[in-house]
Length: 193
Picture (cartoon, rainbow, N blue to C red):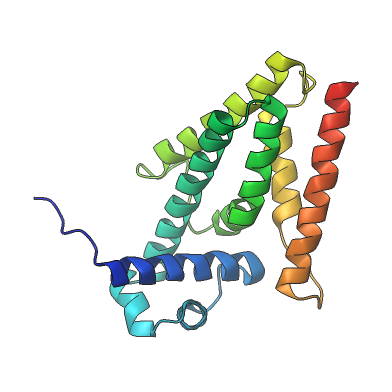
């Protein structure tokens, strides 16, 4: 039996909850109170719990959303950018904005995408799309052969994770954007060399 499509307001609430959860988990970790997530999303706690009955359900949906969005970002970059390096750079910028590399490591003790039968195929699809971007760069000579998927993924994790300290979340994210541009510039120079 097919499930009913979600009403527009319910879909909007779900999106707001996932965005709030993404930002707060990136900023404060997986122990962030669910009431804080509801407040940031602009919904009541009852709305959050109606959609996500517990922390595990919310974080599972958050990981699914992050992986789906990052896979789409990689595929779109490959389709729309003629230059392989620009496709990779575009993906890296979009992945940073999606905060996937800050959220997924924070949730690894709560949700294991590799072991979850629903998340694992989406995780593989996302990783494969990024591997294709890197392979295209290798084939075009835009990236040295010894720069691997793991190098790019781990650097994105290191850049995306918010720094400790008193700066605002936006100031920390702006610094991450600057560091990503430095990383992209370094990759570009390595490819040109």
